[in-house]
Image 1 (cartoon, rainbow, N blue to C red):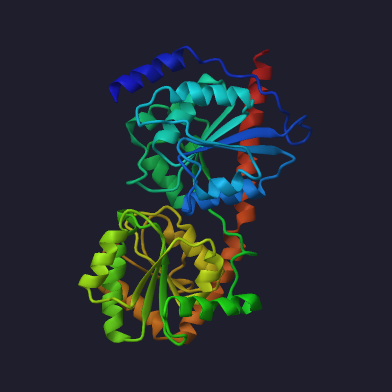
Image 2: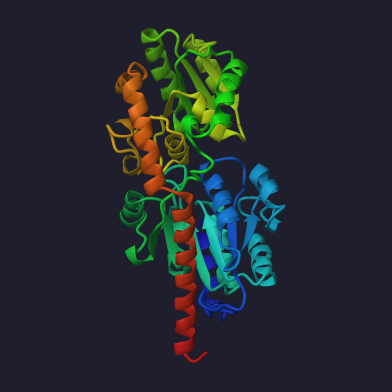
Length: 414
């Protein structure tokens, strides 16, 4: 770690000149600003889906998006590669310092005006350092978690001075980045996550969705009349699917006909399969893997849940709410900003299976209350957490930072 920090210091000392911006502001720019998003890979996940949606919707008259995957491009990357340039396999190992040369050369080649690193870890460190070497005008880091496993760490904090902005996904997340991660307030931009409300709709809004509820239930061997709790989250310890199963066990004792669906893939699949067997939940809990039809899956559930130990602003809950599904979640990160307790759903403390079960049962056993919260949840997402607002937030931030850099260079007489 110390050797990497030392190397970074030498590189930065020799690369403090800033590239003269070549584009113009949105009021009269000669060409769109080239913005390169630096990620590890683009498989299905919350942050990855947000990035995919952002790139799909960003104004092409003002921005030209490029994706740079340190590892393989992933499933979403494959789809995006048909629309925008997607580069991959730039990092061969954790300590592959040659990635600096590969990235900086790429940034220069495509005349990058801005680099946005997405998530913490390698991409945040190498992406920003390579951007500085390539004299990229705008360097920003988007963060999507509040601590482990996405903590920033010493190496990434060391590059704060060369970073123009840190993107938080909710107000509480922005506070966390300032107070815990120690990033300067003036460099923190709060851009709330957003959901594509035209895609995620309640059953009552889209007749075609009604066909999918019986289809999926039949596919999972779940009776049409059964009450179903669904979770959409990667199978990772931080999502605490163990707690999900413990609550499912308690709920099934009260509602024998209830079923529980886990959507996602990850390292914990084998463990969860064993745990389902140990708890005697075979036939009640369904591990259905990844899905590219999440907007059709949510309406097949009666209740959307999340049992995470850490979250910043979980997209899966917002998608459920956009589909008119009432939700129950652990009270972590910025979740309470999205879910107004008692209005759109219920919250309980992380790790508390007893109260978690009471919350699930409270809604499962009261169809009227469940529906009312779902309707309120949909309205709340439409008004406050739309994809359009998120995209505009990124567009405004990138242009404002770029223009300030441009003006500073003009004032300096360069």
